[in-house]
Amino acid sequence: MTGCLSRQNLQKNRKMKKMNEKNKKVLFLDMDGTTLDDEKQISKENLDALRRVTQAGHEVVITTGRTDSSAAHIRRVYGLNQIGCRYMIAYNGAAILDCETGKLLFSRKLSMEYVKELIDAARREDLYIHTYADDRVLTERRDENLAVYLKRTSMEAQVVPDMKLALKQRPYKLLAVDVKNPDRLHAFLAKQADWAKGKVDMYFSCREYLEMVSEGVSKGAALLRFCELMDIPVQNTIAAGDECNDLSMIQAAGTGCAVANAQEEVKAAADYVTQNDNNHSAIAEIVEKFIFPS
Image (cartoon, rainbow, N blue to C red):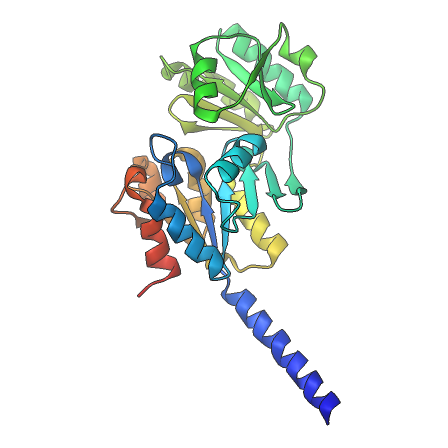
């Protein structure tokens, strides 16, 4: 009789665990302009709200265009690691990582051939461009574009005579930056559109940053892959963002949210637009409405 009861209890526990997993929600959060305020800080209200999410057994996933090292810096400095924020999507979806184990769950890098062609194209247009190597920004020139980027990300740079020769392995992405005249980035995008089709996806993460990743790489695609890896229903996902590189995950998520300061096209694609902006704890508002509705 005891053995039968033990088996029944085990089956009951397994069933309850399966039910709990089906009810688990995942909150995919863009960082800059969404979770972080304009001073690159996380408000106490946001952090407390995210702690409630993880304590309730749900997941919070950092979802950013930043490098894995830069996103890890945010996770550590602002205490997201201490509240149970385990997973990270970096490079606009080119990498998915388990920060606790250090395991790379998914990775998709650019073709070196395409990287070299884009570097040459940027040179022809005298456009600042960089990539990444050994947790550093790799670029050919030190100017105000680099200075602004380093200040925003707390990264270090390696300036080299030739990026193509300095690169030892395929990178996750390239980034063109123009803080003074962003229209030049739009012109560059238009010029590369025909060549890039079927090879490279290019989109803006803010008006001064033009992202270049392997075809099919996006935050939205990474959201769907994460759900597949973790066996979580897509309808249980909530995504929040503000810029064009967030569009795909807002459209892919079960509930897509745009913060009040988001670009108009992002708001138009969202299921919900917050009343508060990134400087006034928009994420806490999303948590209250969709994770813990009254």
